[in-house]
Structure formats: structure tokens, C-alpha cells
Amino acid sequence: MTKKLVVCVLAFLLFGSVFNTHLAAQENGTVILATTTSVQDAGLLDVLIDAFQKKAGLIVKAIAVGTGQALEMGRQGEADILWVHSPADEKQFVDEGYGINRVTFMHNDFVILGPKNDPAKVMGAKNAAEVFKKIAAAKALFVSRGDNSGTHKREKAIWKKAGVSPDKNAYIEVGQGMAKTVMVADEKQGYVLADRSTYLSLKKLSDLAIVFEGDNELINRYSLILVNPDKFPKVNANGAKALFNYLLSRDSKEIIENFGKEKFNQQLFFWDLKDKL
Amino acid sequence: MDFILEGFRKGVILLFGLNGEVLAVLKLSLYISILATFIAVCIGVPLGSIIAIKKFPLKKIIIALINTGMGLPPVVVGLFAVLFLSRNGPLGFLQWLYAPKGMILAQVIIATPIITGLSLAAVQSVDPRFYQQILALGATTRQSIWVLLKEIRLSVLAAVIAGFGSVISEVGAVMMVGGNIKGQTRVLTTATVLETNMGNFDIAIALGLILLTMSFIVNLALTFIQQSKDRQK
Image 1 (cartoon, helix red, strand yellow):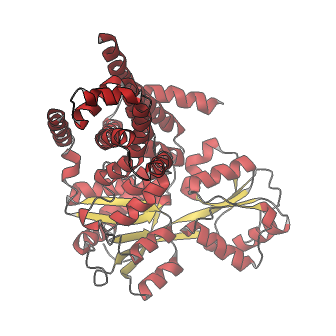
Image 2 (cartoon, each protein chain N blue to C red):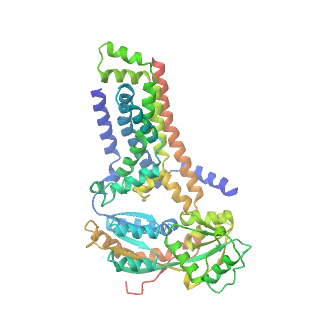
Image 3 (cartoon, each protein chain N blue to C red):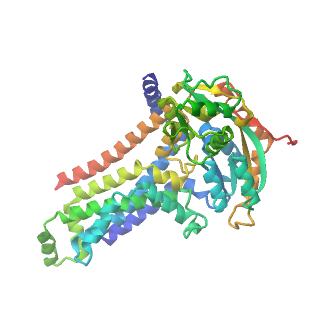
């Protein structure tokens, strides 16, 4: 039995060391980035992080969750830097002293998707609020993220602006990511608020069409926020700053602006920073 | 219909032309699941045997607890692992969160009750007089458990296979604890979820096929060990 135990331990050590290569680098110089599923699902996150890691020699742990959860991670000091899209919540986050150096640096846009036959007759509406009003009046099905993400918050803001509540029997909260939500809307032929890149990546699989786009209300601005190291001593302030500077650099701008041109033949994300780089 | 067939066609192509990225994901999946199963076996098999053999108070309650543990929801394990391993949590100093070590820990917690429970049942299925007889022949407790386990190795290996099956296919806990980070903690199951979310059903199908194939190969190996040893006897 003891012999077997020794063999067990030896095998364990051997096995560990063979595969240990990718574990080695994680100890120091890791930055935890809390971000949103939308940038990951679009594929932009992986491209940017790969480029940064190669350049800076730092390891980034990019955790893609909803904006609500990302901000919560910042409030607990569990992340070093945030990349989120819900301006009002971001301001509150900074005002409460959890974050510093908030920079709004890029945007994409939301579109309202719906069945091609447009049962609520929303096409041609003047603004997003009017679209939502018509959906509520027609008691047409609306599919919501329901997960407190940036997209969900924007949806709630539009309902508020429209001054109506959706019909309870025609409102589904999915509680999942953007792509799943669009798929549910597609299956059930409902209306849904989605970001353009998710729509484009699912276009070939879905029967939904864009029923409304182009309102200022639908611009989706992304910001970077550093988690306040004075508040959380365990935060990797230097690493976070390095990633922050990279994401606001000319290299990053080029990647962001060219992203999606090859796959979808159109630009998906737009650079907002007016300062000289 | 077309996109399903197209997905399978592309999936098979990807399966045979394994690129570096897919290969890294595959390696990590195998590494985490095999190591987690191994640790769970080292804990679960002896523990199950001892509980089966020894008489002690509250034994039935302990067995009921282990049986409950066999159905432990992975997302609950994931949630508690995240809370404990987080920076400001009690085990935060380990820096295991969003790293393979944390994923292994979560999987060990998932697999150990399964392996313990099944070994326990296997040992209990042996005629108790057999154990008494070995003891009467002068064996120590440890030696007699070893003889017992040899006797029921078919069932013990079945326990190992069940444990491995539960961790290689698991997605909730590894997603929460690992974070699905590219090149660091992305495994086959979480990569499949991500590709589905990105609308890349072909790659998702390919990853699914790779997962099935890997699971089949490992189980085939375990089954060969299980069956061949039996024949030698």
C-alpha cells in the first residue's frame, strides 16, 4: 500500500510538471479585466488581449460577464480594470470612489430586431421609444436579456422613456447572453434589442430583420475604468494601467476600427477618443 | 437543416486538422479532468472502503450525505469555489481563481462524492464474511481493504469512469471558476458554449465531436484495463 502511495505521488508530480508550462506564468504580472459578453462574443476581446499580451508580456485574465456583474466585481476589488457599457452606472461607480480614470473610448450601436412581417408595424418609427410604444400597444412579443447587463439596462431606459410597460404576457426575460437571447427571439418570432455585431454574426441563422436603427438612443458607448487601488490594496495597479494605456493606444485603435471588416464587410466598433494619440 | 449538415461537415474537417489553438484547449481539458479524477480516486476509493467496512455511529447519515453529494450541482460548487478563492475570500492568497488549479479543485469536489459513493456501494456488495475471513487470516485493515478492492476492481473502475465522465463533461463550475480565458482556462465545454454564442455552430459541433472522441478514448483505455485484468485471473 505504501509503495502504491509513493507511485501515486510520483505519478502526480510527473504529470503536473509535464503540463505545468501554462501554469507557470500566472503567478505575477496578471491583470484581471472584467468586461462584457458583447465584446467577447463579437470576437474583439480575444484579438486585443492577444495583441497586448504579446507586446507587454503580461497575462490578462479577461472575465466576460454582464456589465452589472463586472461593476460588482470592481466594487469587491475582484478585478483590476473594467471595460463596460452603462454610462449612468459607471458614473455612480466612480462617484462612489470605486473607480478612477474613466474614459469613454469607443462605441457600437444597438438595433431593434423583429419578425420580417413586423406584426407591431414599427418600421418607419421616428425613435426607439416610439418603437417600444408600438410593441406594447400591439401586445407583440418582446424578448429581454433580463440579466442586468448593459444591454438590459439600456432596454429598461428605453421603456422608461417611452412611458409604457410591456405587456406582461408578451414579455420574456431570458437571463442569458446576447446571442442566446436573439436565438430565443428568433424561435418565438419576437422583438429584441441587440447589438449590431451579435446580429451580424447570427444573421445567417436567424429569420429576424432589423426593424429600427440609427437613433441616438441606440448608441452603445464603452468605457474603461481603473479599479481604485487606494481602496483595494490587492489590485494590480501597474498591470491595469499598462492595459489601460494599451487599449487607448494607436495600435488598439487600428484593431478596433478594422475589426469585422473582413468577416462582415462593415465596421462594427467606432473610436471615440478625440485626443491626440 | 442545411446549417446542421454544414456544421457537421466543417466539424469533421476541423476534427482531423487539429490546429494549435484547439489542441491547447484539448490538452487543458484532458489535463484538468484526468488530474481531478486522479485526486478524487485517491480520496474517494479509500474513504468509501473505510466507511463501508467500519461500524460507527451516524453511519447511515454519512452515507446519505455522500449519496446527496453524488448529485451535487456543479454550479453550486462553482459558486462556492469562486467565493472562497476570490481575492478577498478566505483562500484568496492561493491565487487559484481564474486558473487551472481552481478548476481542478472544483472538479475534485464534484467527482469525489461520486467515486466515494460508488466504491462504498461496491465494497458493501461483497459478502461481509469475506472481509472477516481476511482479517481472521491475520491481515491488517489496510491489507484487507486492498484485497477487497482487488476483488471488486470491476466496480471500482466503473466508479473511476463515472467520476471522469462527470468532470470532462462539466461546464458550469469550470466556466465560473476558470472564467473561460483564452489560452489559460478555456476547455472544450466552455469553448463550445462560447462558439455557440458567437454563432459559429460549425466550430461548436467540431468541439463537441472532439470532446466525445476524447471521452471515448479515455473510457476505452479504462475499459481495457478493467476487462483485461479480469481475464488474467
